[in-house]
Image 1 (cartoon, rainbow, N blue to C red):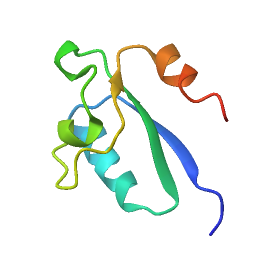
Image 2 (cartoon, helix red, strand yellow):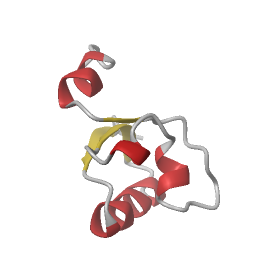
Image 3 (spheres, helix red, strand yellow):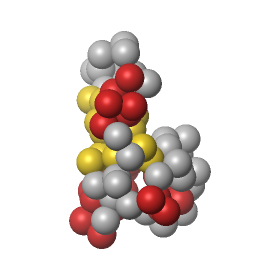
Length: 75
């Protein structure tokens, strides 16, 4: 398999949640982060927020893009 696309979901409202669930289904995409400024979502697992049946995903939602990027310096 080719190298996976590493993705960060920016915004986890209704549309962002749908996009995250769709990305999770694709073998070629690895979700490595998520960003949202709504306080109740920050620090929670992305899979749980989007209502995924296979949650948790091990991807925490961050309020700041800089924090999300700094966790993945292997780009």
